[in-house]
Length: 128
Length: 244
Image (cartoon, rainbow over all chains, first blue to last red; front, side, top):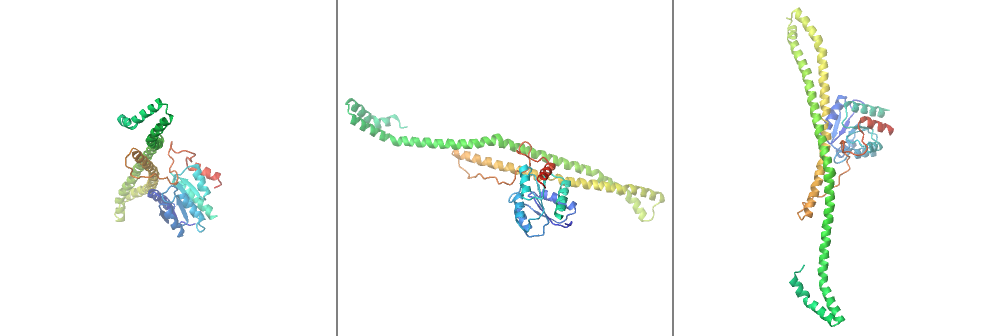
């Protein structure tokens, strides 16, 4: 995976999308698309070309967990790295996300270091 | 209840007939008059029973509504107050943190600008080849100090800007909490509309809607129940326990 890999950031708050996008830019990833919930994200993913999905959980329309399940159920997308970046912090939810096949889980509020660490970890696992 | 004169007209003659039959020991006549009287009375009894039932129904409806209102008053409204207080605290902290960072970034920016301006005169004379040797040596010394200082100050400002950016993330969290409170207010509104309807007022037709299972939203101290990860380390420990 190179620095020109394409990210899709899904969050219903534009401020949070901006923050994540800026952090990704700082890490050298310039190619970042945005969507405000699972319903708008899924067709973008199915259209192809996206290498990494970062999604919130709690969103109107289609929540992040449903998006994750839809991604894992789609043979073309099943192996896409998915990082859940969410305020949902209940143990049962984290376990639910893990069982649904999430690649990483970061809770808000988060730091730039945490995001970088999780991205690097997921990408190094995906490269193996 | 019919007034007494009406009862007199309705039953007076029959009561007299009853006592006459009794005096005569005429059992058949007595029972016939009595049956007739009971027959007259029956529809009135049914009407009273019907009234009683509907009063009971209203009382039951009201009791259910009262239970819901009590729940709002005892639990959900205090919770909402706590959530909003948490929003206030988060927005306050974010605003102060942003102001701190902006204030911390002013001096290094000023320092760099001042030092650059101080160097500019000597640099121009050097470019015009009319600088004196003493000023030239002075300029070199200043340049030696300026370049690493300018670099350090710019890096500090860049770091502060990144932190300002991250601090704005509060808006996402407070927005989610406020949406939850708005939903509660909507439910209370629906209950009040129903209360008005039971009291004989007009209903606006507002319907109660089930909350979609879209997650619980951010953790609110003192409100969120169940086992909650208190930080990223908790999450990492939980996930590594699951083999991730």
